[in-house]
Length: 68
Image 1 (cartoon, helix red, strand yellow):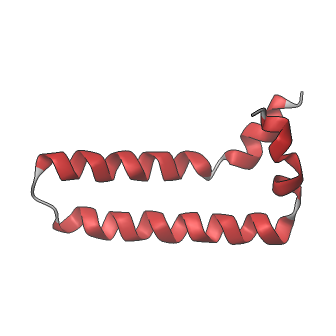
Image 2 (cartoon, rainbow, N blue to C red):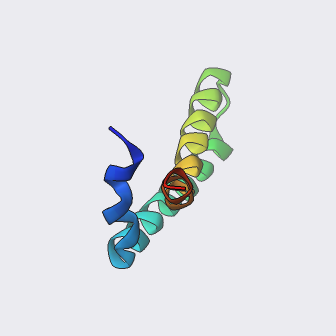
């Protein structure tokens, strides 16, 4: 799937803002969970999820820079 297929989604402000809000909430939830973890395996997995979610926050910029 090419990034250009995501252009309509990134230009739809209402949907994209809702998406960003959801991603932000998920990051906060994962961060709260991370604070209570003690097992290194679960800590690394949670850090990985946070990293992936943070990368989704820049989706619009990535899609728009790909069209140039």
